[in-house]
Length: 394
Image (cartoon, rainbow, N blue to C red):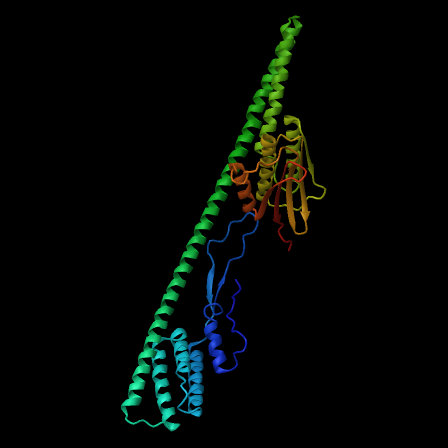
């Protein structure tokens, strides 16, 4: 993590400018929040949370600035005579000390300011009818400075306490979000694992059983045909229906558990999906992918396949399209999956009535660090896109 240091506003060459710069630099410049690196594709965020990096001037430097400013104010107060009051400038230095250093040092600066003020006026030729007058003025000024020190000190402590609470709450929320994302990722992984298991059971279990049943039906048909019985045709029709069931079960198994999502596996799985949709639903479903983007992560490929699968099924259920076009392309450093159909399109209130499938699609897009967009197609139908950044090549 790269530390972000505090910066001081320009124009801080004089003691007054430097002190004003330091006060303006707190907390906007002296305290910065460094946020963690965004999650990479398919990886949940680091739950460690944002870290507050404090870049503070050393206390001796702040003390030196405060005393230098006090000295400058005292000299100017003496040179301008006792008729002009510089109490507000002394108060500025006291506020600086109370806010950035400590209450104790601010009290010392206040006492020193009163001494410098009284001594400067006396040296400039101020005369009092009685000694009670400067004592009374010093007492009143001490009360004012004391109230300011107490208010600023209390406000600073409250601010620091609030900053600590905000930082703790931010870290707690970040950990909670990270834990939730890990849980959602685990749920999706469990779902994918169970779907693969069901797909394998369908392919290796039910399909094999139906194949054996079809073979038995063929044997029965041959025996009936050898006896010249009319039921031989019925047996042949039964075998044909079983073979159709085998094909449907195999397509279902491939849809639930697609091919291995490695290298060209995503493109192959999308082509199989297009072929199955076209054969089962009697629509034109094609895949356009002249130059497939490099997607080596199997988890990312699986999420993209599920997004395409859900988008196609949504179009079939709600849009009644005649044609569905899927495309997988690369746009600069991003990959884009799009599904376009010529169906009935989206209803007017589709955004307020999003179903579970749409929400899962959006979540899958977030899991790979991408963005999901569902918009009406200008030529009719619906246009679904999922765009995400490709991993950088070292």
